[in-house]
Length: 103
Image (cartoon, rainbow, N blue to C red):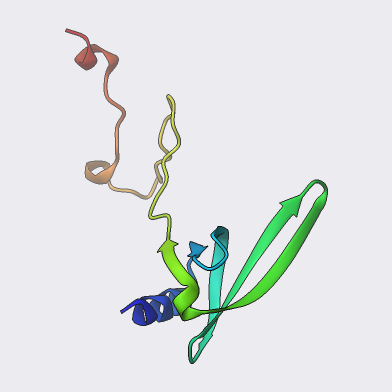
């Protein structure tokens, strides 16, 4: 099951976070670039002080303990959502009126 899911993530090319059980560490903002047998190739970047490094690591499938991926994100705070001028009026999102939140 995990092998099929990792293969799907490889095909999708999505950014993920991977937990390696044998090393007890997370690899964040990574991409699975290849699967060959039980070897999974992961590509990611790290930033230390003023240096940005790109890494490619080959790990065994059995050492992968967890895989997470961000589904969506929304900025916090008071903001006006961007609306395309081409969007029909019925599909546009309008901010709530401040009066409707006060009782």
